[in-house]
Length: 164
Image (cartoon, helix red, strand yellow):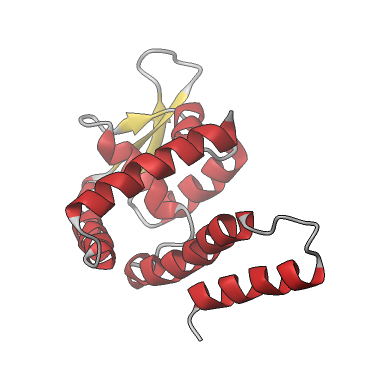
């Protein structure tokens, strides 16, 4: 039985056992949670093959998206990646050890530090984003363009509703 059917089965069981409750939110939230786990498992191998741990590609990608000179402070990285500065520091330390990023004194504030991509980091990030986006595109292949646009809008609306 597919996971989608399993979620519907769970809702049916709750409707039988607790008809006083509306279990229908599980049809959306349960599916999103299951899908998130499935997507994560499908996307992770690209980064694992490059010996990147969880979140390390996020650091590289955030820096690469900034454009030249590919630098951000730890605080800026933290905000862009929605993680604590402590998590950023751990990831950056591992990436420094691999020669993919560097940490240096900020030109704008001698007391501050900036993290920047090394040439090897730019090259690896450019290679990985191509593979990553191709992987994501393949996952969405079964959706018609109009369905993709509708799903984009629905997910954006749900995200606004949940974070409001």
